[in-house]
Image (cartoon, rainbow, N blue to C red):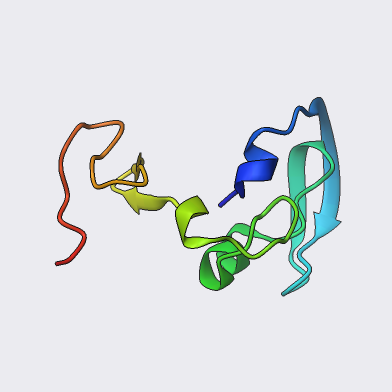
Length: 86
């Protein structure tokens, strides 16, 4: 998961390595600066993978079978409506 600020960041193409600030897992990213949190810790703790900031509810994407829901309830990639109350 990535916060709104980091989604807009322009990055250089390079490989960089770091360790997750939560669990210490090695992270290799295809740009500089490297991610601060691994995917698992990011999802579990609602942190931006790139900068480590706690995500707001508006910044969190909900995965639905390989595609993302926008801030409403319409699946962007497959155009299905989902009832998030269920």
